[in-house]
Image (cartoon, rainbow, N blue to C red; front, side, top):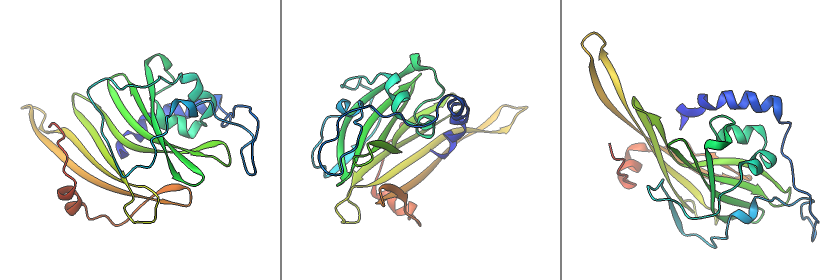
Length: 227
């Protein structure tokens, strides 16, 4: 997950020149504390109800659900969030599907979103603040991207790890790559690395939990990566 950040810098710069912030869809406020605007993205995410444990992995089969017009993402997400969603402003190669949503706490929705661009696949929890009427953050759940020289993949479990009533996230990630040992002789060595990340819901956002006992969690939460 850490290695793909640089791929988004070009998009962030492009959007910095073309986007000044989130654009909210005008609507009528209802009830005390209701937002003055209502997102047009929300209907694309059906209610998943109360979740116990949600396992998020990129599947080979086509995902069912209504595709979200990329124009809606560009209209409602600010430049920082958009820089995490897409690899450049090429909307023709971008396919976004809303999988559903769960209530992260009393005032935040976690909108489960799948993004495909080229042959890369990503799944995120897009956090919506129901009081402010805006999307505030994007939490990676599952990723698969790379090329012939290496690939990076991750999967996540969403569950209440600390027993406080709010879902947390455990993410397993692996990088598969070829290390060149001798350029002249074409000698290469296959390498595989493993990482574990814990995320706790705190103050309206997912915060990293440190330290992490990676060796124990790798054994306790096994994944077949396919390499």
